[in-house]
Image: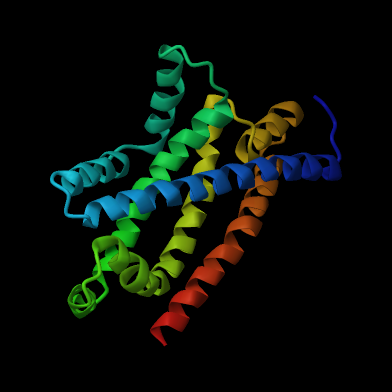
Length: 214
């Protein structure tokens, strides 16, 4: 059994936390960009686009994230693409986040009164101008709180990337546990670090929601 001090364990896990944060940011930003594109497609009144986006959302919401990770990781390998666990996890989490963000933002756009659509149509604005200048700015106020809340889900979802070998916080905790034979101590530290990362975002999301409803 290898002896580690508490400080050694903490600093090792703290180093892994940056990869959890980095993967979360990649998934959130990438998912946001893809999700925004899907949202525009869903409301663009293009033939079949809304149905295709709805199926995309249903597939990612209706299957376990763990299975999606395996499919992306081993699927890319079957296609002859030599990808690292980080790349596979980033692709999978980006697709996963885009599906959920599309649905969250669709609800926010639907919350905008129909009169706003009619008023912008009467001004002869095309679809892109309607979304850019009228609908999305109003929907943004509604969307901030649930979007921040979903970021917490992404952070916790990155823990599953450990199953394909990506060394983030959970994987680092497992490595410490295997080396020290002290799983309780290792996962206490892991849990505290997840809490330190997620709680401020949850608190901020709740505060934004309360402010919007006030």
